[in-house]
Image (spheres, rainbow, N blue to C red):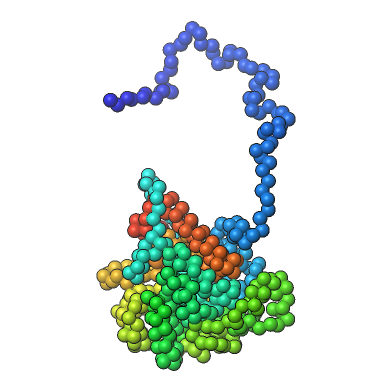
Length: 444
C-alpha cells in the first residue's frame, strides 16, 4: 500500500487555539540565556585539544615528495627544481614564440563538460582496445628523444612504468636506450617503436628489422620533421648532445648536484639508432632526416613492415584520410608538441573533423592524439570528441625529472585518478559511453 504524506500548507491558516499567545506578546528570553550554549566562550579542555594535536613527523623521502604532487603541474615544478636548465627547457619548450603549445593547452581549457546525472557510476572502467590489443588506460607514453638526458633512468623508467600500468610505451629513434634493452627491461610490456625515415634507406630498414625482432607490434612513423623547428630555448641554452660543461652549466649544476651525479656516474648517452653524436639537436635532425619523403615512401614502409603501422604528425583532415588510403592502421593527430611549426593546427581542434571523415569513409583506422595534455580531464575530453587513444610526452617527462621511475608512476596515478573522477562526474562508467554530447567547445 502506498502512503501519501501531506505536506503542511503554509497558505492554510490554522484554527485559533485558546492557548496560543500572539507572537508580539510572547515573552522573550533575556540576558545570557539568549546565547546558545555552543557559542558561549570557555577555556578549552585538554580532552578537546588532544585530538587536534597530532603532529606528523616530517617526511623527506622521494616517495613522500612525489605523493604531495596532486597535478602534472606540481610534477613540473618539482622537475624544474631538480633538472638543469638546458634539459628542462628542451622538454618544456617549443618552437619560436611557443604559440602552438600555448594554444594546444588552452584548447583543453576552452571546453565545457556536460554531465549526466542519476547514473550508476560506482565502478569506473578505464580500459580500452587500441590497434587490436587491450590497454588498461586510454593513454600511452609518446616517443621522446634524448630521454636519459632528462633523468638517468630515462627510457627504462618509462617502459617499466608503462608495463606496470598496462599501457603501451613508444621508444623514439632518438631514444637513449636501444630497443633491445628496453624490451629486456620491460619484457611483459607492450612496446612500440617510433621511426624517422632517414635519407639512408638501408639504415631505416635495419631499424625496422630490429624493431620486429625485439617484439614491437606497432611502428609509428613521424612525418612532420622535414627540417628542424626553431627551438629558441635550446639555441639560447647552447643545447648540445651530450650536454657540454661550460661555466653556465657548472654554475647550474651547483644547484642540482643529484642530476649531475647521476649523469656523470652512469653509462654515457647512446641512441637507439646511432652510437654517438656530438652537436646541436637541430644539426642532428637536419643531417639525418629525409626532406624528400612522399606518400610513395609510406607505401614502401607499408610493404616492409608487417605489424601495425601508425603515422604521427597529421595536421589536416585530408592528410589523415590519405595516409589511411596508403595503408596506415592509425594516425596520431600531432604538431610535435608545438616543437616544429609554430602556429600549427591544434590536434584537439582537428579531432572532430577527422572523426567525421573516418566515419563517412567507414574507416576503422585508430585516431590518436597528443600535444597539450596535462590532466586526465584533457584525455576524457579527447575521447569524448572521437579519439580512440591519447599519448603523453611532456607530462611523463615531468614525472621522470621529478623522481625517475617513481615519478613516472606518479604521473600515471594522477592521470588515472583524474580520468576516473571526471567520468564519474560526467555520469559515465566506461569509455564507450563517452560521446561528443559530453563536451562543448567554447567560442567555436
